[in-house]
Image (tube, rainbow, N blue to C red):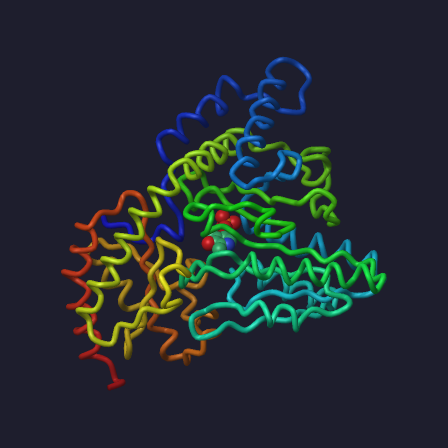
Length: 398
Ligand SMILES: *Cc1c(COP(=O)(O)O)cnc(C)c1O
């Protein structure tokens, strides 16, 4: 099989698995227990917290371990809104981009449906980029949270997070002058970006940041939420004092250890991995020119693209049909986000970029990882032109 769906998930690397293994068996203690076995587990969680804080430029006390980015994003949106509602004694306003992962968009919709929270969905341009000026224009007196993702999982667009951070800092200053006491929190989903982009929470000016381990060779079901010291939010899970009373539940020790190892390795090998994957992606983009009417979507400027993602619109055919045909020859790719594939809904990301429903159906994403080689791309390009030509011959749209 040729796996070209690394933005959906990646396999656990050997080093990560080795680091995790003892915590399933001989080091099985509960970190809350006071005897040696428990303390050993607690030490492992604390060490992991230090390890994951480092590549973010954060301090360990600013890390909350979660079950993944879905939980982290839910916690950020719901936790900040609940706390803001308590301060305001009325419903807050939230700003999110229209190309966020469904776990952000659906949390925003839930807040509107359940509590009447007003949400502004920021537009993107035809390259899938948010304009920081639009963020500035959208901020109101009761804006409690702004959430814009760092790297998009469908197009690979890199959003101007540091610029938006400056907009938020200016809004914060203006609030001080007008004696508006509502904090304004800036959150980013950095799941796809972490592996390939140096991240420093201070340089970005973010207050909250979400990650999930399985997008960079760690296990599925573990993630984190960075929360800047002093940021107000209400915990969403009760029942224990774990994570400094901010996220109840026995810590998933082996997975936390695995995530820490995966983050450490990703940060250590970041530059070389980014170079290698960029080269491979550019080869894929170049070879794709052999197929007529296959348009690369997302930013034209390679600097504004994540190294590992390239999505193409194959005109007059549906992405789903391409995926099924690729699967028949042992090639795994995706139509945008794994959560929407199978639903036959056109991607909200491509639609937000201005493509019509019909065009948005043709989007196919190839996302590369460390196992991929040029040979994989050559193999893909042996089959894909044939598949596209066959599907187009059958297509009712000419
Ligand atoms: C995968 C992904 C998520 C969700 O991560 P889970 O591990 O499923 O919780 C959130 N945001 C982005 C951008 C992703 O790619």
